[in-house]
Length: 232
Image 1 (spheres, rainbow, N blue to C red):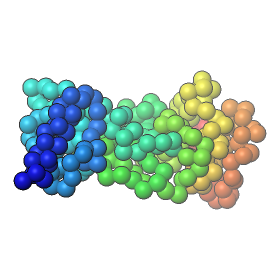
Image 2: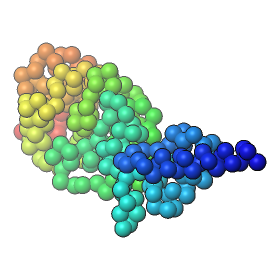
Image 3: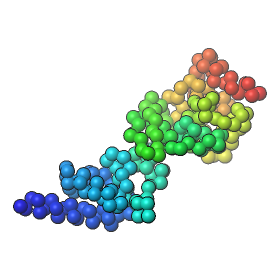
Image 4: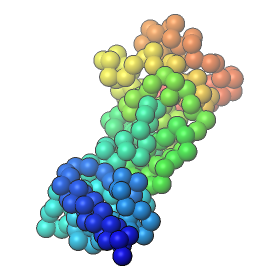
């Protein structure tokens, strides 16, 4: 039967191709086989410890260890599943990255400015489809982390408000976070975030950039800034 022979030959060739790779992601669509042959090939490589299944439809070929195939760095998984600008830490992950909390979450928490991909065993993805200005402004992970921390301050920021405020300001003064990108990227943020970012930029003397941020209503502004007034 020539068809079966050809399928077996293709599967053998594709298996060799996978085994020759290192530090590479694999998807079923990457293989020249099809249907059940592809699934059988991938599952066999996983069982043999030659591939690690990251989630449905995504596999990793790294280095063999006594405990099986190595796991890819979290940053690579994030880049593979949620590529592009406007992606970054949220929840405790954001506050820890910004050094305003010492709590280290068991899993990475990542905000995505669109529909969130399926989470993995060590990454939880959170959808932020309405916050599309993050993409247009080309925000990096640290800048996304700041917006998320400003939004979730009461729940995730561990430092006293005055110290956290100074830390946020230093990140911008030092150039680690870009004030102009933050101002543009905040256009579609909740009112609380816009009020706090406006106040932060004003405190740094960035008055023109602060004025670019849409002003929330007075009630939202007063509520957002209450945490800072209580620390004064």
